[in-house]
Amino acid sequence: MGLARKTLSGIIWAYASYFGRRIFTLLTTAILARLLVPADFGLVAFATIAVTFMETIRGFGINDALIYTDKDVEKAANTAFIFNILIGVGQCAFMFFAAPFALNFIDDPQVVPVMQVLGLIFIIVGFGQTHDALLQKELQFRKRFLPELLATVFKGIVSIILAFTGFGVWAIVYGQLVGAIAQTIAKWYVLRWVPNFRFYIEQARSLWQYGVQVLMFSLLDNALEQADQFFIGIMLGQVQLGFYAIAARIPEMIIANLSLVLTQALFPAYSKLQHDIPRLKDWFIMTTKYTSFLSVPAGIGMSVVAPELVLIVFGDQWVETIRFLQVLALLGMVATLPWSAGDVMKAIGKPDVSTKLLLVESLYTFPMIFAFIYFTQDAVMASLANLISLCITTVLRLSVVSYYLKMNPLRFVTVFRSPFISAGVMALGVYSWRLWVNSMGSPMLLTLLTSIALGGVIYGAMMFLLERDELMNMIETIKKARSGDDDDDEDEEGEDNVTA
Image (cartoon, rainbow, N blue to C red; front, top):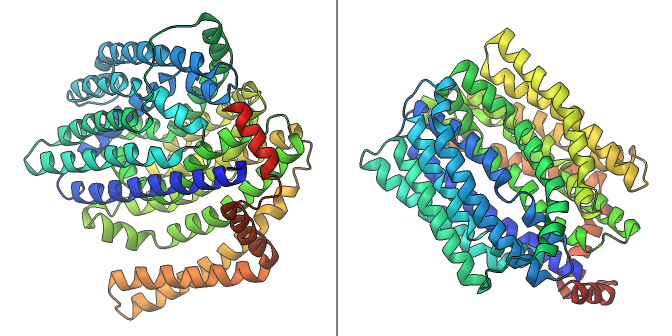
Protein backbone atom coordinates (compact mmCIF):
# COMPACT_ATOMS: atom_id res chain seq x y z
CA MET A 1 0.00 0.00 0.00
CA GLY A 2 1.41 3.44 -0.96
CA LEU A 3 2.16 6.18 1.52
CA ALA A 4 -0.79 8.33 0.43
CA ARG A 5 -3.26 5.50 0.86
CA LYS A 6 -1.77 4.43 4.19
CA THR A 7 -1.84 7.99 5.47
CA LEU A 8 -5.41 8.60 4.31
CA SER A 9 -6.54 5.32 5.82
CA GLY A 10 -4.71 6.24 9.03
CA ILE A 11 -6.38 9.63 9.23
CA ILE A 12 -9.83 8.13 8.62
CA TRP A 13 -9.43 5.43 11.27
CA ALA A 14 -7.75 7.78 13.75
CA TYR A 15 -10.52 10.33 13.27
CA ALA A 16 -13.22 7.67 13.61
CA SER A 17 -11.61 6.44 16.81
CA TYR A 18 -11.11 9.87 18.29
CA PHE A 19 -14.52 11.20 17.26
CA GLY A 20 -16.24 8.07 18.57
CA ARG A 21 -14.45 8.40 21.89
CA ARG A 22 -15.25 12.09 22.16
CA ILE A 23 -18.91 11.53 21.38
CA PHE A 24 -19.14 8.92 24.13
CA THR A 25 -17.15 11.16 26.48
CA LEU A 26 -19.49 14.06 25.78
CA LEU A 27 -22.53 11.90 26.51
CA THR A 28 -20.89 10.67 29.71
CA THR A 29 -20.05 14.23 30.74
CA ALA A 30 -23.60 15.39 30.01
CA ILE A 31 -24.92 12.71 32.39
CA LEU A 32 -22.28 13.36 35.06
CA ALA A 33 -22.94 17.11 34.84
CA ARG A 34 -26.43 16.40 36.17
CA LEU A 35 -25.19 14.11 38.95
CA LEU A 36 -22.13 16.02 40.18
CA VAL A 37 -21.43 19.66 41.04
CA PRO A 38 -18.96 22.12 39.44
CA ALA A 39 -16.57 21.73 42.39
CA ASP A 40 -16.22 17.99 41.65
CA PHE A 41 -15.27 18.66 38.05
CA GLY A 42 -12.92 21.42 39.16
CA LEU A 43 -11.15 19.11 41.61
CA VAL A 44 -10.62 16.40 38.99
CA ALA A 45 -9.65 19.02 36.40
CA PHE A 46 -6.90 20.33 38.69
CA ALA A 47 -5.62 16.82 39.39
CA THR A 48 -5.77 16.11 35.66
CA ILE A 49 -3.53 19.11 34.96
CA ALA A 50 -0.83 17.44 37.05
CA VAL A 51 -1.47 14.05 35.43
CA THR A 52 -1.40 15.54 31.94
CA PHE A 53 1.86 17.31 32.70
CA MET A 54 3.36 14.07 33.98
CA GLU A 55 2.02 12.20 30.95
CA THR A 56 4.21 14.44 28.83
CA ILE A 57 7.23 13.07 30.65
CA ARG A 58 5.85 9.52 30.50
CA GLY A 59 7.88 8.40 27.51
CA PHE A 60 10.66 11.01 27.68
CA GLY A 61 10.06 11.38 23.94
CA ILE A 62 11.07 7.73 23.53
CA ASN A 63 7.90 6.76 21.68
CA ASP A 64 8.30 9.57 19.15
CA ALA A 65 11.91 8.48 18.70
CA LEU A 66 10.75 4.91 18.06
CA ILE A 67 8.33 6.15 15.40
CA TYR A 68 11.12 8.20 13.81
CA THR A 69 13.82 5.52 13.77
CA ASP A 70 14.27 3.27 10.74
CA LYS A 71 17.15 1.11 12.01
CA ASP A 72 16.99 -2.00 14.23
CA VAL A 73 13.33 -1.38 15.00
CA GLU A 74 12.88 -4.61 16.98
CA LYS A 75 15.79 -3.82 19.30
CA ALA A 76 14.60 -0.22 19.64
CA ALA A 77 11.08 -1.41 20.52
CA ASN A 78 12.32 -3.73 23.27
CA THR A 79 14.48 -0.97 24.70
CA ALA A 80 11.58 1.49 24.55
CA PHE A 81 9.33 -0.99 26.37
CA ILE A 82 11.67 -1.16 29.36
CA PHE A 83 12.03 2.63 29.30
CA ASN A 84 8.25 3.04 29.43
CA ILE A 85 7.80 0.68 32.39
CA LEU A 86 10.53 2.30 34.47
CA ILE A 87 9.33 5.79 33.69
CA GLY A 88 5.73 4.85 34.58
CA VAL A 89 6.79 3.53 38.00
CA GLY A 90 8.85 6.64 38.66
CA GLN A 91 6.00 8.96 37.73
CA CYS A 92 3.53 7.10 39.92
CA ALA A 93 5.91 7.46 42.86
CA PHE A 94 6.42 11.14 42.13
CA MET A 95 2.65 11.76 42.02
CA PHE A 96 2.20 9.96 45.34
CA PHE A 97 4.76 12.05 47.23
CA ALA A 98 4.00 15.34 45.44
CA ALA A 99 0.22 15.19 45.92
CA PRO A 100 0.19 16.87 49.39
CA PHE A 101 1.75 19.99 47.89
CA ALA A 102 -1.43 20.47 45.81
CA LEU A 103 -3.10 21.78 48.98
CA ASN A 104 -1.11 24.97 48.44
CA PHE A 105 -3.24 25.60 45.35
CA ILE A 106 -6.60 23.87 45.99
CA ASP A 107 -8.30 24.16 49.39
CA ASP A 108 -9.87 20.70 49.28
CA PRO A 109 -8.19 17.80 51.15
CA GLN A 110 -9.62 15.29 48.66
CA VAL A 111 -7.14 16.53 46.06
CA VAL A 112 -4.34 14.52 47.73
CA PRO A 113 -5.82 11.02 47.48
CA VAL A 114 -7.33 11.84 44.07
CA MET A 115 -3.90 12.68 42.65
CA GLN A 116 -2.29 9.68 44.32
CA VAL A 117 -4.80 7.22 42.89
CA LEU A 118 -4.67 8.80 39.44
CA GLY A 119 -0.90 8.28 39.53
CA LEU A 120 -1.49 4.54 39.11
CA ILE A 121 -2.48 5.29 35.51
CA PHE A 122 1.18 5.84 34.64
CA ILE A 123 2.14 2.27 35.52
CA ILE A 124 -0.89 0.84 33.72
CA VAL A 125 -0.40 2.72 30.45
CA GLY A 126 3.36 2.17 30.56
CA PHE A 127 2.79 -1.46 29.59
CA GLY A 128 0.99 -0.42 26.39
CA GLN A 129 2.92 2.63 25.21
CA THR A 130 5.40 0.73 23.04
CA HIS A 131 2.61 -1.23 21.39
CA ASP A 132 0.86 2.03 20.60
CA ALA A 133 4.03 3.57 19.13
CA LEU A 134 4.58 0.54 16.88
CA LEU A 135 1.01 0.78 15.60
CA GLN A 136 1.48 4.48 14.84
CA LYS A 137 4.84 3.86 13.19
CA GLU A 138 3.28 1.69 10.50
CA LEU A 139 0.08 3.78 10.32
CA GLN A 140 -2.02 0.90 11.65
CA PHE A 141 -4.70 3.17 13.08
CA ARG A 142 -7.40 0.66 12.30
CA LYS A 143 -5.95 -1.61 14.99
CA ARG A 144 -5.77 1.29 17.45
CA PHE A 145 -9.52 1.83 17.12
CA LEU A 146 -10.57 -0.98 19.48
CA PRO A 147 -8.25 -0.17 22.45
CA GLU A 148 -9.12 3.52 22.39
CA LEU A 149 -12.84 2.90 22.07
CA LEU A 150 -12.86 0.30 24.85
CA ALA A 151 -11.03 2.69 27.17
CA THR A 152 -13.66 5.38 26.65
CA VAL A 153 -16.62 3.02 26.97
CA PHE A 154 -15.38 1.34 30.15
CA LYS A 155 -14.40 4.69 31.67
CA GLY A 156 -17.80 6.21 30.92
CA ILE A 157 -19.90 3.28 32.10
CA VAL A 158 -17.98 2.87 35.36
CA SER A 159 -18.08 6.62 36.08
CA ILE A 160 -21.83 6.86 35.50
CA ILE A 161 -22.63 3.78 37.62
CA LEU A 162 -20.48 5.01 40.50
CA ALA A 163 -21.92 8.54 40.26
CA PHE A 164 -25.44 7.14 40.49
CA THR A 165 -24.46 5.17 43.59
CA GLY A 166 -23.07 8.23 45.37
CA PHE A 167 -19.29 7.99 44.87
CA GLY A 168 -19.07 11.68 43.97
CA VAL A 169 -15.71 12.79 42.62
CA TRP A 170 -14.35 9.23 42.94
CA ALA A 171 -16.71 8.10 40.20
CA ILE A 172 -14.56 9.99 37.70
CA VAL A 173 -11.29 8.82 39.26
CA TYR A 174 -12.12 5.11 39.28
CA GLY A 175 -13.54 5.41 35.77
CA GLN A 176 -10.18 6.72 34.57
CA LEU A 177 -8.34 3.75 36.08
CA VAL A 178 -10.67 1.16 34.58
CA GLY A 179 -10.42 2.83 31.17
CA ALA A 180 -6.61 2.73 31.30
CA ILE A 181 -6.62 -0.98 32.18
CA ALA A 182 -9.01 -1.82 29.34
CA GLN A 183 -6.94 0.15 26.83
CA THR A 184 -3.63 -1.51 27.76
CA ILE A 185 -5.04 -5.03 27.62
CA ALA A 186 -6.64 -4.32 24.22
CA LYS A 187 -3.35 -2.96 22.79
CA TRP A 188 -1.59 -6.22 23.61
CA TYR A 189 -4.46 -8.12 22.02
CA VAL A 190 -4.53 -6.25 18.69
CA LEU A 191 -0.75 -6.08 18.12
CA ARG A 192 0.33 -9.47 19.56
CA TRP A 193 3.90 -8.17 19.94
CA VAL A 194 5.69 -9.69 22.94
CA PRO A 195 8.85 -7.93 24.16
CA ASN A 196 11.94 -9.98 24.97
CA PHE A 197 12.71 -7.75 28.00
CA ARG A 198 16.22 -6.96 26.75
CA PHE A 199 17.79 -3.53 26.97
CA TYR A 200 20.10 -2.51 24.11
CA ILE A 201 22.57 0.25 24.96
CA GLU A 202 23.13 1.46 21.39
CA GLN A 203 19.41 1.76 20.70
CA ALA A 204 18.86 3.38 24.10
CA ARG A 205 21.43 6.05 23.27
CA SER A 206 19.84 6.72 19.87
CA LEU A 207 16.30 6.87 21.30
CA TRP A 208 17.40 9.17 24.10
CA GLN A 209 19.27 11.62 21.87
CA TYR A 210 16.21 12.17 19.74
CA GLY A 211 13.62 11.74 22.48
CA VAL A 212 15.05 14.29 24.89
CA GLN A 213 14.44 17.04 22.34
CA VAL A 214 10.85 15.89 21.89
CA LEU A 215 10.50 15.72 25.68
CA MET A 216 11.53 19.34 26.15
CA PHE A 217 9.11 20.40 23.45
CA SER A 218 6.27 18.36 24.97
CA LEU A 219 6.88 19.77 28.46
CA LEU A 220 6.82 23.37 27.31
CA ASP A 221 3.94 22.80 24.91
CA ASN A 222 1.86 21.18 27.63
CA ALA A 223 2.68 23.93 30.10
CA LEU A 224 1.52 26.56 27.62
CA GLU A 225 -1.60 24.58 26.77
CA GLN A 226 -2.56 24.16 30.43
CA ALA A 227 -1.56 27.67 31.50
CA ASP A 228 -5.03 29.22 31.54
CA GLN A 229 -6.48 26.27 33.49
CA PHE A 230 -3.65 26.39 36.02
CA PHE A 231 -3.99 30.13 36.69
CA ILE A 232 -7.79 29.85 36.93
CA GLY A 233 -7.46 27.05 39.47
CA ILE A 234 -4.94 28.75 41.76
CA MET A 235 -6.24 32.34 41.45
CA LEU A 236 -10.03 31.94 41.15
CA GLY A 237 -10.78 28.48 42.59
CA GLN A 238 -11.97 25.04 41.57
CA VAL A 239 -15.58 26.08 40.82
CA GLN A 240 -14.47 28.36 37.99
CA LEU A 241 -12.08 25.64 36.85
CA GLY A 242 -15.05 23.27 36.79
CA PHE A 243 -16.92 25.59 34.41
CA TYR A 244 -13.83 25.70 32.21
CA ALA A 245 -13.49 21.89 32.24
CA ILE A 246 -17.08 21.43 31.08
CA ALA A 247 -16.80 24.09 28.37
CA ALA A 248 -13.67 22.44 26.96
CA ARG A 249 -15.45 19.15 26.27
CA ILE A 250 -17.19 20.23 23.05
CA PRO A 251 -14.20 21.98 21.38
CA GLU A 252 -12.08 18.96 22.32
CA MET A 253 -14.49 16.63 20.58
CA ILE A 254 -15.08 18.62 17.40
CA ILE A 255 -11.97 20.77 16.88
CA ALA A 256 -9.04 19.48 18.94
CA ASN A 257 -9.50 15.97 17.59
CA LEU A 258 -8.53 17.24 14.14
CA SER A 259 -5.14 18.30 15.48
CA LEU A 260 -4.50 15.17 17.50
CA VAL A 261 -5.60 12.85 14.71
CA LEU A 262 -3.43 14.64 12.17
CA THR A 263 -0.44 14.47 14.50
CA GLN A 264 -0.87 10.74 15.00
CA ALA A 265 -1.17 10.07 11.28
CA LEU A 266 1.04 12.74 9.74
CA PHE A 267 4.18 12.51 11.88
CA PRO A 268 4.87 8.91 10.74
CA ALA A 269 4.05 9.94 7.16
CA TYR A 270 6.24 13.06 7.31
CA SER A 271 9.06 10.93 8.76
CA LYS A 272 9.02 8.76 5.64
CA LEU A 273 9.54 11.96 3.58
CA GLN A 274 12.34 13.37 5.75
CA HIS A 275 14.85 13.22 2.87
CA ASP A 276 12.49 14.71 0.25
CA ILE A 277 11.98 18.35 1.31
CA PRO A 278 10.05 19.52 -1.81
CA ARG A 279 7.54 16.73 -1.40
CA LEU A 280 7.35 17.26 2.35
CA LYS A 281 6.58 20.94 1.71
CA ASP A 282 3.71 20.03 -0.61
CA TRP A 283 2.28 17.61 1.95
CA PHE A 284 2.51 20.24 4.71
CA ILE A 285 0.72 22.90 2.65
CA MET A 286 -1.96 20.44 1.61
CA THR A 287 -2.68 19.15 5.11
CA THR A 288 -2.64 22.65 6.63
CA LYS A 289 -5.08 23.89 4.01
CA TYR A 290 -7.49 20.98 4.32
CA THR A 291 -7.37 21.21 8.11
CA SER A 292 -8.37 24.87 8.00
CA PHE A 293 -11.26 24.02 5.67
CA LEU A 294 -12.77 22.06 8.58
CA SER A 295 -11.52 23.69 11.76
CA VAL A 296 -12.22 27.33 10.91
CA PRO A 297 -16.00 26.94 10.35
CA ALA A 298 -16.21 24.56 13.32
CA GLY A 299 -14.59 27.05 15.71
CA ILE A 300 -16.42 30.16 14.54
CA GLY A 301 -19.74 28.36 14.22
CA MET A 302 -19.48 26.80 17.67
CA SER A 303 -18.78 30.20 19.20
CA VAL A 304 -21.97 31.59 17.65
CA VAL A 305 -24.29 28.77 18.83
CA ALA A 306 -22.60 28.35 22.26
CA PRO A 307 -25.70 29.39 24.31
CA GLU A 308 -27.87 26.66 22.84
CA LEU A 309 -25.09 24.04 22.93
CA VAL A 310 -24.34 24.52 26.63
CA LEU A 311 -27.92 24.68 27.88
CA ILE A 312 -29.09 21.68 25.81
CA VAL A 313 -26.09 19.42 26.46
CA PHE A 314 -25.24 20.24 30.09
CA GLY A 315 -28.27 21.98 31.58
CA ASP A 316 -29.16 25.33 33.17
CA GLN A 317 -26.73 25.02 36.10
CA TRP A 318 -23.84 25.42 33.63
CA VAL A 319 -24.97 28.75 32.16
CA GLU A 320 -21.66 30.36 33.18
CA THR A 321 -19.96 27.92 30.82
CA ILE A 322 -21.35 29.73 27.75
CA ARG A 323 -18.74 32.50 27.75
CA PHE A 324 -15.97 29.95 28.23
CA LEU A 325 -17.17 27.96 25.25
CA GLN A 326 -17.34 31.03 23.01
CA VAL A 327 -13.65 31.75 23.64
CA LEU A 328 -12.42 28.15 23.79
CA ALA A 329 -14.03 27.34 20.44
CA LEU A 330 -11.98 30.10 18.80
CA LEU A 331 -8.87 29.06 20.75
CA GLY A 332 -9.23 25.47 19.52
CA MET A 333 -9.64 26.71 15.96
CA VAL A 334 -6.48 28.82 16.03
CA ALA A 335 -4.53 25.96 17.64
CA THR A 336 -5.16 23.72 14.61
CA LEU A 337 -3.68 26.13 12.08
CA PRO A 338 0.05 25.64 12.87
CA TRP A 339 -0.37 22.23 14.52
CA SER A 340 1.48 20.08 12.01
CA ALA A 341 4.42 22.50 11.91
CA GLY A 342 5.84 20.70 14.93
CA ASP A 343 5.48 17.36 13.16
CA VAL A 344 7.45 18.72 10.21
CA MET A 345 10.29 19.82 12.48
CA LYS A 346 10.37 16.40 14.18
CA ALA A 347 10.27 14.65 10.80
CA ILE A 348 13.34 16.49 9.50
CA GLY A 349 15.20 15.75 12.73
CA LYS A 350 15.02 19.25 14.24
CA PRO A 351 12.67 18.98 17.25
CA ASP A 352 15.02 21.32 19.14
CA VAL A 353 13.85 24.21 16.94
CA SER A 354 10.27 23.72 18.15
CA THR A 355 11.55 23.66 21.73
CA LYS A 356 13.33 26.98 21.29
CA LEU A 357 10.16 28.46 19.80
CA LEU A 358 8.19 27.38 22.86
CA LEU A 359 10.69 29.12 25.11
CA VAL A 360 10.05 32.34 23.21
CA GLU A 361 6.29 31.80 23.31
CA SER A 362 6.33 31.31 27.08
CA LEU A 363 7.83 34.78 27.51
CA TYR A 364 4.58 36.43 26.46
CA THR A 365 1.94 33.74 27.14
CA PHE A 366 2.37 33.25 30.89
CA PRO A 367 2.61 36.96 31.78
CA MET A 368 -0.38 37.81 29.58
CA ILE A 369 -2.64 35.18 31.15
CA PHE A 370 -1.60 36.17 34.67
CA ALA A 371 -2.17 39.87 33.99
CA PHE A 372 -5.60 39.34 32.44
CA ILE A 373 -6.80 37.34 35.46
CA TYR A 374 -5.16 39.58 38.04
CA PHE A 375 -6.67 42.81 36.75
CA THR A 376 -10.13 41.49 35.81
CA GLN A 377 -10.69 38.59 38.27
CA ASP A 378 -12.59 36.99 35.40
CA ALA A 379 -11.76 33.38 34.51
CA VAL A 380 -12.88 33.80 30.90
CA MET A 381 -10.23 36.48 30.44
CA ALA A 382 -7.55 33.84 31.05
CA SER A 383 -8.72 31.95 27.99
CA LEU A 384 -8.99 35.20 26.03
CA ALA A 385 -5.37 35.97 26.90
CA ASN A 386 -4.42 32.47 25.78
CA LEU A 387 -6.26 33.03 22.50
CA ILE A 388 -4.38 36.28 21.82
CA SER A 389 -1.06 34.61 22.62
CA LEU A 390 -1.88 31.70 20.37
CA CYS A 391 -2.56 34.04 17.45
CA ILE A 392 0.95 35.43 17.85
CA THR A 393 2.31 31.90 18.19
CA THR A 394 0.62 30.79 14.97
CA VAL A 395 2.36 33.50 12.95
CA LEU A 396 5.69 32.68 14.60
CA ARG A 397 5.52 28.91 14.03
CA LEU A 398 4.42 29.13 10.42
CA SER A 399 7.17 31.63 9.69
CA VAL A 400 9.86 29.37 11.15
CA VAL A 401 8.69 26.21 9.39
CA SER A 402 8.54 28.21 6.14
CA TYR A 403 12.20 29.06 6.59
CA TYR A 404 13.22 25.41 6.92
CA LEU A 405 11.03 24.32 4.00
CA LYS A 406 12.33 27.22 1.89
CA MET A 407 8.96 28.79 1.17
CA ASN A 408 7.39 32.25 1.47
CA PRO A 409 5.39 32.51 4.74
CA LEU A 410 2.92 34.87 3.03
CA ARG A 411 1.69 31.82 1.16
CA PHE A 412 -0.39 31.00 4.23
CA VAL A 413 -2.48 34.13 3.66
CA THR A 414 -3.78 32.44 0.52
CA VAL A 415 -4.17 29.13 2.35
CA PHE A 416 -6.39 30.61 5.10
CA ARG A 417 -8.19 33.35 3.16
CA SER A 418 -11.15 31.39 1.80
CA PRO A 419 -12.14 29.47 4.96
CA PHE A 420 -12.04 32.64 7.09
CA ILE A 421 -14.07 34.68 4.60
CA SER A 422 -16.59 31.87 4.22
CA ALA A 423 -16.83 31.28 7.97
CA GLY A 424 -17.28 35.02 8.57
CA VAL A 425 -20.24 35.17 6.19
CA MET A 426 -21.59 32.01 7.83
CA ALA A 427 -21.33 33.55 11.31
CA LEU A 428 -23.28 36.66 10.26
CA GLY A 429 -26.00 34.53 8.69
CA VAL A 430 -26.33 32.16 11.65
CA TYR A 431 -26.28 34.97 14.22
CA SER A 432 -29.05 36.82 12.38
CA TRP A 433 -31.05 33.61 12.08
CA ARG A 434 -30.74 32.90 15.82
CA LEU A 435 -31.94 36.38 16.71
CA TRP A 436 -35.00 35.98 14.49
CA VAL A 437 -36.05 32.47 15.55
CA ASN A 438 -35.48 33.24 19.24
CA SER A 439 -37.69 36.34 18.94
CA MET A 440 -40.37 34.03 17.53
CA GLY A 441 -40.21 31.81 20.61
CA SER A 442 -38.70 28.83 18.80
CA PRO A 443 -37.70 25.79 20.94
CA MET A 444 -34.00 25.86 21.81
CA LEU A 445 -33.25 22.51 20.17
CA LEU A 446 -34.88 23.61 16.91
CA THR A 447 -32.86 26.82 16.98
CA LEU A 448 -29.63 24.87 17.39
CA LEU A 449 -30.37 22.31 14.67
CA THR A 450 -31.54 24.87 12.11
CA SER A 451 -28.56 27.12 12.90
CA ILE A 452 -26.12 24.26 12.28
CA ALA A 453 -27.85 23.32 9.05
CA LEU A 454 -27.96 26.92 7.82
CA GLY A 455 -24.31 27.43 8.73
CA GLY A 456 -23.29 24.34 6.79
CA VAL A 457 -25.18 25.49 3.70
CA ILE A 458 -23.76 29.03 3.79
CA TYR A 459 -20.18 27.86 4.40
CA GLY A 460 -20.40 25.18 1.71
CA ALA A 461 -21.79 27.62 -0.84
CA MET A 462 -19.13 30.24 -0.08
CA MET A 463 -16.31 27.71 -0.27
CA PHE A 464 -17.63 26.39 -3.57
CA LEU A 465 -17.54 29.93 -4.97
CA LEU A 466 -14.06 30.68 -3.64
CA GLU A 467 -12.32 27.29 -3.82
CA ARG A 468 -14.16 25.26 -6.42
CA ASP A 469 -11.01 24.01 -8.16
CA GLU A 470 -9.29 23.22 -4.87
CA LEU A 471 -12.28 21.28 -3.57
CA MET A 472 -12.46 19.27 -6.78
CA ASN A 473 -8.74 18.60 -6.52
CA MET A 474 -9.13 17.48 -2.92
CA ILE A 475 -11.90 15.04 -3.88
CA GLU A 476 -9.80 13.73 -6.76
CA THR A 477 -6.79 13.27 -4.47
CA ILE A 478 -8.87 11.27 -2.02
CA LYS A 479 -10.25 9.11 -4.82
CA LYS A 480 -6.77 8.40 -6.17
CA ALA A 481 -5.44 7.59 -2.74
CA ARG A 482 -8.30 5.22 -2.05
CA SER A 483 -8.00 3.47 -5.39
CA GLY A 484 -4.20 3.23 -5.21
CA ASP A 485 -3.67 5.25 -8.40
CA ASP A 486 -1.34 7.75 -6.78
CA ASP A 487 1.47 8.54 -9.21
CA ASP A 488 4.06 8.04 -6.53
CA ASP A 489 2.74 4.78 -5.18
CA GLU A 490 5.58 2.76 -6.61
CA ASP A 491 8.23 4.92 -5.00
CA GLU A 492 6.26 5.04 -1.77
CA GLU A 493 6.04 1.25 -1.72
CA GLY A 494 9.78 1.12 -1.85
CA GLU A 495 10.07 3.57 1.01
CA ASP A 496 7.59 1.59 3.07
CA ASN A 497 9.56 -1.61 2.52
CA VAL A 498 12.80 0.04 3.59
CA THR A 499 11.33 1.37 6.84
CA ALA A 500 9.23 -1.67 7.67
